[in-house]
Length: 254
Image (cartoon, rainbow, N blue to C red; front, side):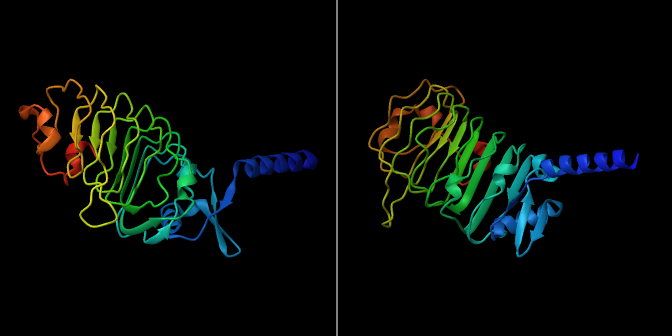
């Protein structure tokens, strides 16, 4: 009987060991914030924190919003890829720069909403997942987007960056915000053209750029919102140019 109990005990231990998968975490404000939010998922091994990637508090989380003032300086987002059911992720800051390897991290396949605001991304964005519906990277120094965007994307917001060329847009995109793409030199604008606009587009805000012409315009729906300005925007029917403050992100679904 004792042998049977011992065998069962060892079997349970092996199962639990197989489920628990810990990975070392780098030192950084992002990881510190995760540790504060999910303390039961972290273990100190020597002088380094390890995260249990099978921890229920992490794998079942669907929303992670990091406000300004939590993350500072150079950091990475190592650990985010283990949030198996995450749908919403945002990180805001005024003095935050992603580390050199953060662009290699893949977003969870469940993610639908991604927003960096005021985050420096000198090496580009992390690897985007199929299924993403909102991609926003605003008020930063983003210079380029992935050559292929997810087909699932409905909102693309990249205003106030340094993008000179936009990739082909997903065929069902509904909102495009790309205003104020500035160069390194003061008072220069680097975005000179827009790609083909999908017929599904309902909102377009790309003012403050060096556009000399617009691509062929799709048949605007009655609820289209554009931005009124001189030059190529005169092609947009006058009754379809009204829009509030571009700083009011809520009107764009962000």
